[in-house]
Image (cartoon, rainbow, N blue to C red; front, side, top):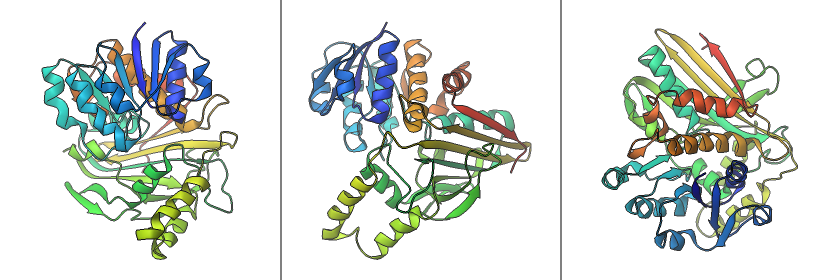
Length: 360
C-alpha cells in the first residue's frame, strides 16, 4: 500500500481520506482543522499550516492537494520541486501547467481539476471529440443543491462559500466561434426541465454562465463551448439583488459574505443531489451525459461524485499510468482505459451516468 499525505480535509477531503484508509493506505492528514471522525481512524493527523508542512517534507509520498483555492496554488511548486507526485483538487484561477517544466525535470506528475466538473466533465468532452471529431457546440452544466427548494436561498455550499461567491463574480471565459471570449458572470440565465433526462428525479432548474471551462478553453476542435452552474429558480436572483444594492462592495462586503457563509452552511442531515449535464452536438451526431447522485448516509453527493473521480486519478498515478508532467484531465484521455476505469469508479458506488445519443 502507498504512503499518502492529504493536504486539507473538508467535506470532499474527509470522504477521500476515509476511502483511502479503508483501502489500507498509510495516510497522514494535514490541516488547520481535522474532523474528529478522522482522529479516531487509522491515520496520522497533523494540525499545522499546510504551506509550512510541505516545505519540510523529506521523503517521497503521494500528495493529495485538497486545500482551499487561496493556498492550494502556493504548495504546487514546492511539491514538484521536491519531485513528488500530486493529485490536485484545489480549484484556483492559476493554471498549474506553468509548473510543467519543473515536473518534467524532477520526473514527477501533477494532475489537477480532478473533480466532477471540472474533472469528469473534461473526460466526457475528450471522449466525445474522440468519437465525433470536431464539435459544433458543447454546454456543460453542473450543480450540487438541496433535494427541494426552500423559501430562502435553496442552497448549501459543499465547498468553501467564499469560493462559491468568487465563482458568482469572476468573469466567465467561453469559446465562441472558435475564439475565447469573456462575459460577465451570471450571463445567459435560463431554465431547463430535467424531468425526463433524470427519470423524474429532478424538475426545472436554472443555469447561468460561470468560469468553469479552464483548460478546456485550449481545445481547438470545438466551435462553441460554455459552462454553467445549476441552481433552483430564484437563488441567483437573490445574489444579483445583493449586488444591485451594493452589499458586496467596500465596507458592506465583509458583513455580507459573513452572512452568506452562515446561510449557506452545509447541513449533512439535509437531502441533496449533484447533477452534471454535458450536452454536445456535431455534424456526425450528438452526445449527452447526465451524471446524477443523491448522496449516501456516509457522504454527500458532491463529496461522492468529486471524491470518486479524485480517487480514480489516485489509482491511475499509483498504477504508474500517468507520465511525468502537469496535466488537466482531458490531456490524459489517450491513456488506455482511463476514462472507462474512472467511470466505473463512479458507477460501482451507484452514481448514475445516463447517456442520451442524438439528443440536442
